[in-house]
Length: 116
Image (cartoon, rainbow, N blue to C red; front, side):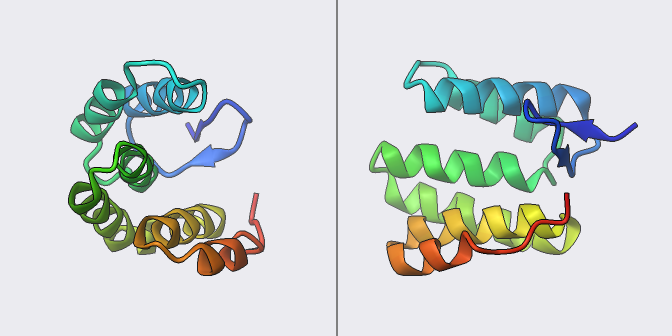
């Protein structure tokens, strides 16, 4: 069974629990509510190869100005890029660029085509 996010987009993960925690964490992150860090930690524990959970964690850490940790999380996500869809690769690249401080690169990367 293919796992999907809140917007019915496919996710590259082997764990329904990891996907559930990732979706909840993104909701918490986007709404500026507490609890995203714990949900992302659980998502990564349930699927250490879940690249989108790592990159979401990188963004969360960046927002908290924990830059060494954010860069490490982004690097972990990028190390998994060969395992994910084209859409997810674009997502990883854009957020990793933002974490590196390259707003221009992040903006250009957002135009990456999707593969649904």
